[in-house]
Image (tube, rainbow, N blue to C red; front, side, top):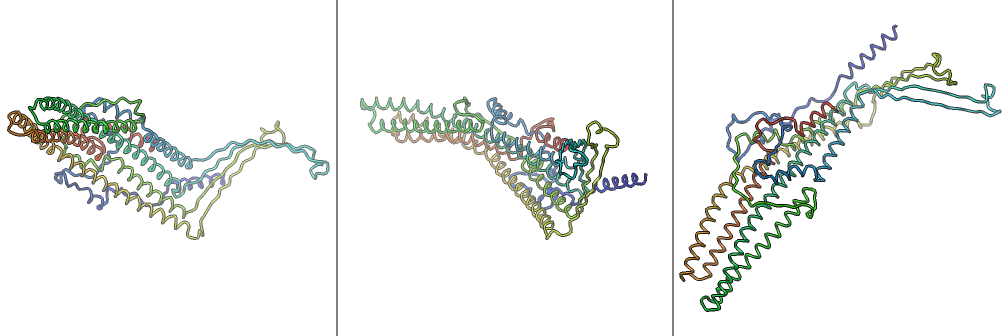
Length: 495
């Protein structure tokens, strides 16, 4: 009875110690003054009361942000790319690998049970020392072995927590890569629509120039126009044709790239795109405060800081004793008929204690490495935040000036169209020569093409802003359970 009490006390003591964990407490990098100082915006007007402590919302749904463009074809591409792009699919498999690796780490917290069965038969010769006891011997054995490493100072739990954080980081990297891919596809799609708009303008211009050059050639034949004017009209026509050919070449290469990003070959993907329409994007006041809360790459970098923090605990726990308990239970007999008798019962308990005494500085070096990796992860986190600030600044600046440039270019295009109309009338009246008329036509064409190009820049700036802040902001009643939250729930509950 006394031995049983002692064994129970030893088990209780081991379980109590196993609840202990050494290592530094985790301080989120967002709480540091240095991080808060670098999260200010230049191209955004705000008041101090609009700012608050960052509350992570990296698990919040990112979209469908593309619906603000009201383009069914774009929505189709956004949904398709996550399923067919091979780079994104390979990242998802990386997430699965790290999730399973964390489950492997978790298994070390529990006893490892192994069932064994053994049979041996021995036949000895006439000169063997065992001959007096018989010529044949059999041994039957059945049993089970239970091994448990008591995590007295949290080495296994620290390693498990680090693996969970790394798996979450991989999930957030996947979300960030998917958002970047969708943003790239959207920008490429709007470039295709921009080129399509320019092609429409050039096709109309080519048709006009072709009629004009034919008309001027006929007039030159009857001496109603000079040969110089006829050649200028022909040059005007083929200059527009060359621009149209160049635009069509760009359109073809852009479509090929879009097919590649969608995980398809150009021959299997039929891409149709409408010309660009007027578009305006209003930026709400809460955009900058969402930056540190919703960008998946920042969340991934923060998880790596957490993982490095737990690695310090694992390195520190290596200085303390390690206790392993192995127990066995089974039956063994020289005859199978006697195997289940009570006299064949056998058991054993083998506790082992490993205490590092002299390691020639290995453990100290491991801890210094863990500390250095933590500092490295923290600096990478700061770099990620700075990159996010820069990208958001760029996107805010482009979005802020896009509307103004569109208005200015529209005014310029309208003026160029009026100049061409007046020049046509003056040429018919003989006030100006054909060279002046051609100059006005080229200026009008250049203004229309520039306006289409700036409209494309406005669409791309909107996409860039959405990507920079980690998704769109107009999500009334947004649910908190998409892919990123799936990672948190899976890793915290299932790992």
